[in-house]
Image (cartoon, rainbow, N blue to C red; front, side):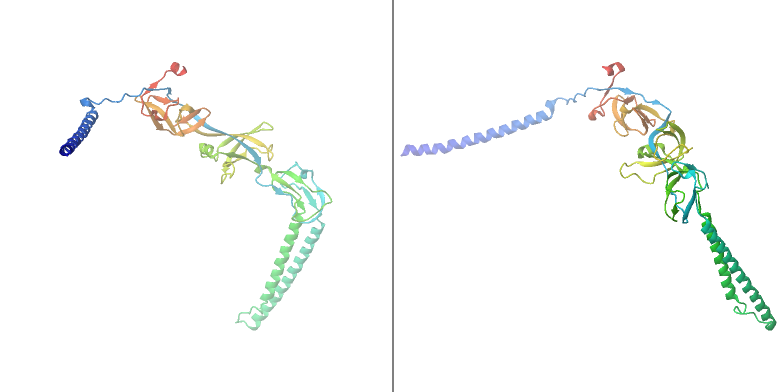
Length: 386
């Protein structure tokens, strides 16, 4: 019993100093780790070394050359008439004469009579209106004579008094004058209706279609065909807003016109622009007035070539030089940089730019997006071809 008691006293002492040893070992490990971290952070007392610079990016460059250039836009348009005029009589009657000029496709001159309506009923109406006017004028003269007699009698009886309107027969005079004016208007209308029995137009035109025949009974206000004014034919050419901007200002510019079917060539002038964009194509219409429209017909297709402004102050470069809509990559002080430019015109694989500072040259080969700021290795022509 005594021996086991001593053993029990020794065991707690042993476990106590073992615990202290473990704690000391942990602390030592932490201290060593902290020291190693500090040494690594300070580079072990050595100077830090810069990361090696990336290799130079190989590029091919050009030097944009000054170039005089005139903007030119090619379009396709069609001949159109602003509006067709209906072949509509203003009076009714039977057709007694039809001109050969009123046939489909025929030409007619200003005020040329295309067809005539029987004028006899309208001649009778003129005679009646003349008789009515003569009667109204006679009645007016009678009332005027009576009024003059009344005024003389009034002056004799009442020399110091002003005559009254009723005694001067002013109401009767007003009514008689109104009847004369009405009769004159009836006569003017009758004569106008008689003139309208001859159908003509005040312009030189061409007949699109006609349904008028001799002996036919026509009604006022009814259409019997259509015509158009040759002088008002125009070319309508849709144009993209970007191309319209290249021509600005477009109105007044000359255009070379070639009619595809006949190879006819003529000159024209842009007279106006459309007021809105086409909802489907998003194009704007240009309206071109041809110098001579005699040989044109509505519906014909026309090739249009418009000369725009002269670009005297510009430089030319390959289209591959553009890195975006208006950016180019250049080499400046041996490194790749990006600058914005003003694009004046694009023709095929060339672009015309406003002059700018392009350093040692404009890069025309693709470069990575992260190449900006890197050194550039400008290749010679032979190297670029390899």
